[in-house]
Image (cartoon, one colour):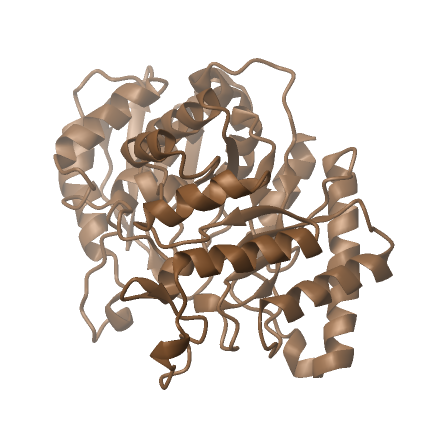
Length: 429
């Protein structure tokens, strides 16, 4: 891709320089869009993340699809859209860099599709993120302060509880485990610094537990820094977590969260917990009600406080059934895709009580803020999230503080693209 450079003068978009040949990659080795935006205060940079487990209702991530180049993952089309359409379109509009919503609205109108499929959500988001960074620079305030101003949130600010993805399954791992993520949540911490201490110590303890049971190969880390031991199923994974929590000395201070990503194993109206087996037996696939009963059993036995995507993104009936049966957080990700329209439907159907907020699912900063506020207005929890294909960009760390949601998941305390977000939160604290 090529870095796009926009120039602002007196806060107005006037011109943009010729693009500079350069390419960056995300943490999975795939090309991604990066935007450099210049004002009189200097250069402001944003890089766009990418997901592996993606919902069908997400905004469109525009890829080139040329199999002979970057195995079809190139982003030259998205970059060209910024170079040839977005940048020239913004020039001369008179919009100032601090007018985030006006710029985002302009980008949405310029695209003209309901899912940003024309210009690409990755192209649009890169510009939207860079504008937010530049606006904070223009105002001379930290990014979280500027984002809080956009959201109407006043100090004092709240640091989040980190949810560390420490055991991987699903589409993120080569083991048999159907559920995608098992997370440690240091809910008993009194500060973010203490939460990091608790989380990292338990992570290292878990590594020793896994090494003793499965061998050193099982402690290799996946895309998000978690381990992928060859466990037989979810219960074995939960047993590993509870053992590590106990051995680390943090019983009562750590709860567990799950991201099931069940759309990945939803087939013909049922759920296949053996979906990675090409010879999976259809007679063993289960209904949403049967899967709900499994969750209820786990919730009674283990200190689980949050379950994300327990059912398929369109299995509304199963979602509503589970929410009525539990008193914990049920988070919509593929179900809601950070989209206000999907969120409104979920509210009406009482399908969940938590949102996973991913800026690249919707494609602009303004819409991300709107989605969070819509959920908070209905009493939902909001967990700000990374993607499995990440960069060193730390905007989501500032965003979670700005919105005061109190929850963030951005991988294990390992791999620099994950730890970068945690380190930024330590700096903010």
